Length: 116
Length: 111
Image (tube, rainbow over all chains, first blue to last red; front, side, top):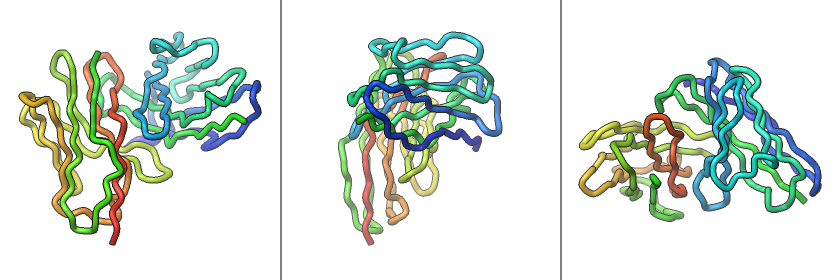
């Protein structure tokens, strides 16, 4: 299947700093990208959906000013965690979709964020 | 809203044992159902799917049948291997939305 990469795979930062996570579709054009957050022993929670060239749609309870999403091209989406705090520590996973059907949604390997 | 509930793990089995991981869902309409697998250090991979009632998805010896009457999609494998050790996620999809996942079940198989 298609490949989705994330960078970095893990990051440790100090409280109050901002962290940017990149998600790239390597061999296909992603019209839609999704950002999920995964807590230990919990499900993947959808944070936001972004379509190339338009503003992201955030799920209820997700602070859009804290989790900035940019989908600048058909192969790149970024998630910036602004003014990170320890409670933002989590595993962030992106997913990219070429069309509208399920079988075209591919997942990145995830990024482990630890905020000290 | 739509949701997926799957059995909590971890599930610990010996090699060649029979595996069942339960999954039930709540949804309006007629969702498609999936099992994803996440091996250590890797991204989620689609394991199998079923798009309508009574469909059976199968792959790599794993099977799951879409049961509308019980709103279930239990994952089964007759003889697990050490290489099957991973986290398994049940998920549903309806057109126009993103995948909705269960909490995941960790499977550990020992030789």
